[in-house]
Image 1 (tube, one colour):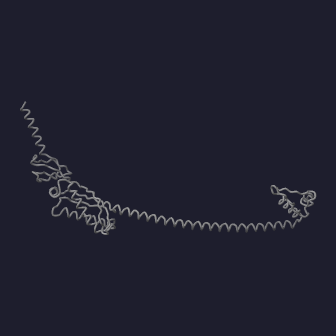
Image 2 (cartoon, helix red, strand yellow):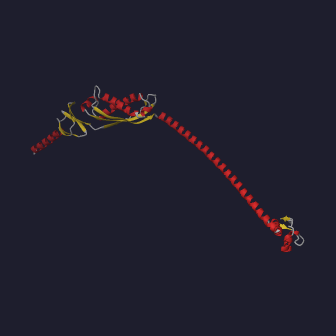
Image 3 (cartoon, helix red, strand yellow):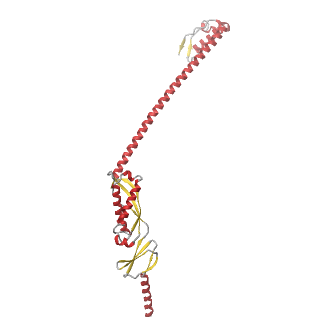
Length: 308
């Protein structure tokens, strides 16, 4: 029984010892083998690999993928015309030589990101100091990013290379500091209000001009219509007078009778009027008394009317 236990224990110890000598390198990583704290080997090929068990050898991993570093500093920078601006940028970089990276930068990606952040910020500061705000928002922006990338590469590949490669440097935002931004917005708002007020004033003036012209045309149209109406009315009155004169000239008795009827119409044709006359002796109703024979008599004088 003791022999079986000894064999089982030995097998377990051997399995543990064997597992401590094997490790797997992922295709997205570098495997770095350390021997007593010194880099013994860098493994770039993915798959199963072997090493001595701890503490003789240890293994650590470093990311070999393309990494992105975003700016986290909101401190302003001075342009050539002494304007304070805030920029946002990002850097695409990767570790290409783990041995140099570990010796000169650090043991993980965070150490490289921290140092790279300082280098990129200093490069941007130097380049922005030489350029104006107009250059930062124009086509010269590409020249700025190219210059920053060149300076960063010179720094990371200098006397003590970092073992990294900077693939791209980009600016995502350029803006004034908050105090200047508020001032710019206020000036823009004032300018827009000035333009709006100018447009309103111009529109009001044009409106008054159009209304005045319309009123003038209306008065002219009314005057012309009144003139034409009076002309037509005059022509009609003249024609009517001619027709009356012709008719009266042919039959004077009819003319006398017609004038009598007009006199009656003018005297008793109003609502509320009262006539006080004597039909037997008054000349006013002689036409009615005489009948047709009295049509040739003189036209009666209008009777006196008493209004109630």
